Length: 240
Ligand code: NDP
Image (cartoon, rainbow, N blue to C red; front, side, top):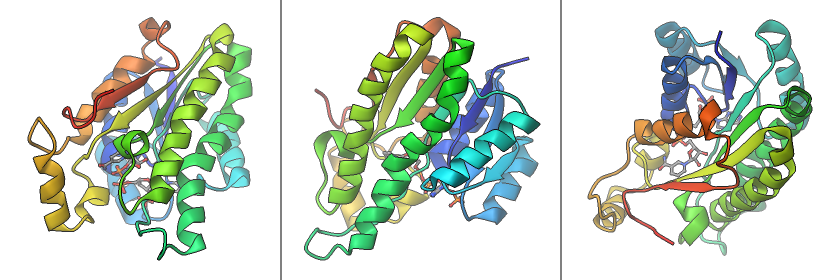
């Protein structure tokens, strides 16, 4: 039987594509979601992948959920920290809550989930952790100091954790997507989106499957020498 993979925010958007691609590649996949029960039920009905509801910004909820999944499905060997939100505003209009929600859901969640699975990965001598960052964490973005700070933090988190995991067979990598056609991006005003697409050399938004293919590549047993890396998947929008 395939290794068990947990995808946070795995029922919609990029996470959904990751869940499906991992299942197609032979992994036993478990998805997480937070509040959209209807989408989660539809996801499970269509894919056969179980979905667990918990808030990744809460450490107690993550820890309890991981224990439940381990008891019901088995040990988590692959963790995809994908769940994320935006609460955009320029800083002079940003409420503290917008800052806190984005930092906790996008960045603190990586600690919450990783802390809950890492001891088991260390004991087993195997682990794959992929953190979904963003081009806007690499390059910054007007109106997104909260999101850019959280995503930039993910890239630092990845490199430090990679150093800790390497001797225990645990690889840790980040994927930095460019603009991908999901509900998150559909909330960007049309005129702003057109300007963004004009700056993408590939001339289009990414598809969720473009990101999922990167995940499947990085979690493979054979990818054991790739750690601490950031894979940019952005149609050439940002290179460095
Ligand atoms: P979507 O808004 O389409 O989906 C978000 C998913 O995350 C949903 O499954 C949602 O669950 C879940 N989620 C949100 N908050 C929580 C929470 N507190 N606890 C658990 N699950 C939660 O997002 P995308 O697919 O567009 O984005 C996925 C990731 O990719 C994010 O980290 C995002 O920042 C990143 N990204 C996206 C880009 C894009 O252009 N779309 C570009 C760069 C990075 P529910 O259905 O219950 O709400």
